[in-house]
Amino acid sequence: WENNTEFFYQNGFNIVAVDVPPFGYSDKNPELNNSIDELSKLLWNFTKIFNNSDKWILIGHSMGGAIVQCMSVMKPYKVGKAVFVSPAMFKELTPQKKLSSFIIGIPLIQRIIIIIGDYFIITEKNVSKMLLSAYGKEVPKETVREYLITFNQKGFTQAFVKTFGNARIKQNVNGLNFKTKSLLFAGGKDTWVPYEKYKNIYELFPQMKTVLIEDAGHCIMETHPEKFNKITLDFLRE
Image (cartoon, rainbow, N blue to C red; front, side, top):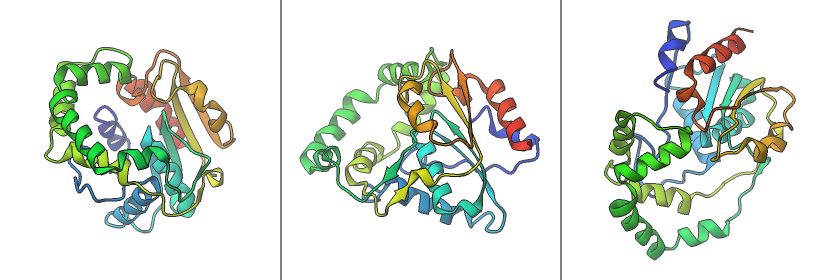
């Protein structure tokens, strides 16, 4: 969000940018339950530090989009508007254990993945490939280095693996109860959360305006900041 936060601050908004666990410089405790519903409750508690009376504008990218949707369903009276960027939105969250979580939850498999991550995956070359896939174009070396710094935070690989292995939905959340007036950005070249794959879910929410940027990948707010900033500001000022 480095190309966006200052813009909105200069236009009169107070900005809180969060490193959701276990990403960035946030908590690397591998025992945390980082499911969508638990992260949503965590962030609602976090907002009380700043403002517990006014409504919030929630903005979420990718998995963060699912968190914004969940937060909005949990406390719709606390949300003024929502903005999504390439979001992995859902129809329903239910307390059940998926086979993928079971497999990655096995300690031996976790350990193998951690070793592979520490010694083979988190390299400048591989991070560059990952970012090329996400951005849909080459990114500056400075950006690659910033990602490497956060990926190499002590305990990140273990926490990242266990995030998916230990994450357990604790409550039923009906995603179709999402009624917040919202704006959605989708990239025509997004291979991480493909627009065509999620289009049928997006269309379930008539209160949501969709902006499809044909030449964009998964990280629209970074690759197309001027367009993202202007369209979002117009939407927030409506």
